[in-house]
Image (cartoon, rainbow, N blue to C red; front, top):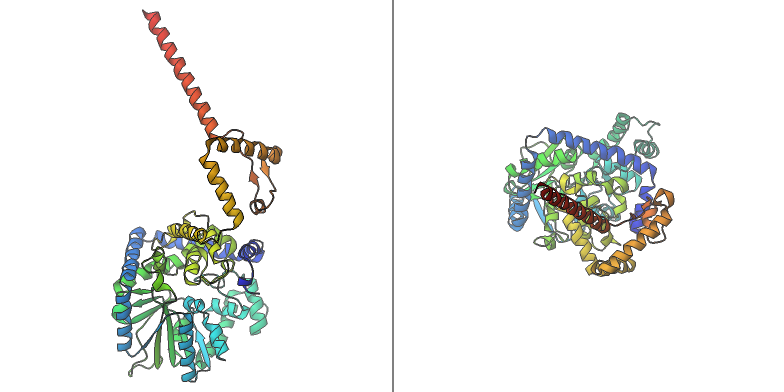
Length: 490
């Protein structure tokens, strides 16, 4: 059963009560947050770096057509091929047809959220092509038959013990949860896949327009093997992931590594500018760059264009209290966390209950604080909520409740009397503890997770009026005393 066949709130409920998931999330997100904080402490003025990064991303989006044309022209000048994919179907069709024309049988892939977005693996497997993920996290979830649950850590939802069980079942590894042993087991299997693969497919962290180059950032070295060992390299790049020159790239790389994993720079940063030249011993014979639109051009210039500034570091996921509680699969789409709650409705609006994703936020602002390019995520989440209501997708009971609240707030008498009744009723239900353990539906969605506090005996307005009255009495008393003193002196 896929996550999309389960209702959104049911996925959330399942995640909250999954003890293994909670253990995995706590271990991983705490580590990411701590590493990021330590990395930022070593930068003299990280806020200035964020400001520069935001300006670079904004400039790229404002001149996207120009930069993409320059990138494509320079790639082709260096012997590469460029395909403009209007949507996921066009991208899948191009890659499958290319594989068939070149008689490809085996494909290795490095980590690529864009390929996940267009469900590329499924299309390749339907074409009877063997596809092997080579990023360790992606490889683990491929063995498990799952999808990524985090932008940079695909298997963040799995514990070490669960991964050990997978390797024992699929790779014949002896029972152990020793991380070096498990890593060595996977590496031994994957090295053979690199050697026999006909095609390598990668994502793209950034495209550099002036250089006709793509940049891939990683820590394992699998992407470098994916892009050099097979005879054909296909790179899939969302059209927004472009910058102008190497100077801009330097700023973005500093932000990406520190925000994603807490490193000054990732272990491997590969800059690829076409296929192998005649005088080069290594590299692919063919290089194909797929520029993926998939609704992005519709977002440019609109109310949500800022979401395309995202550099896919995952910092907003790690900082988000909601993501820390429910993980990535509860969101149901490819992109999860705060930025995923924006990108999924924009890029994949056909997913069931997609309008509910922006509700998966406390609007605490931790995501915007963590974002290396200062994306105003809470603002866009609120706007998406409003869009859902305007489109008539709000639940009927929610609409009734909001309308009742609106009428109450507009009527002072109704507001005061309603508050008094709520105070009396909740204090009776709360008993001596002053906290209510159960409320009827739909209010039980609150009490299923926490107690509901009883209303105060007196409202703020009543306390304020009492305070003003007391202050007036004290003022009158002092005035009277001063008058008496003056009379006595005379």
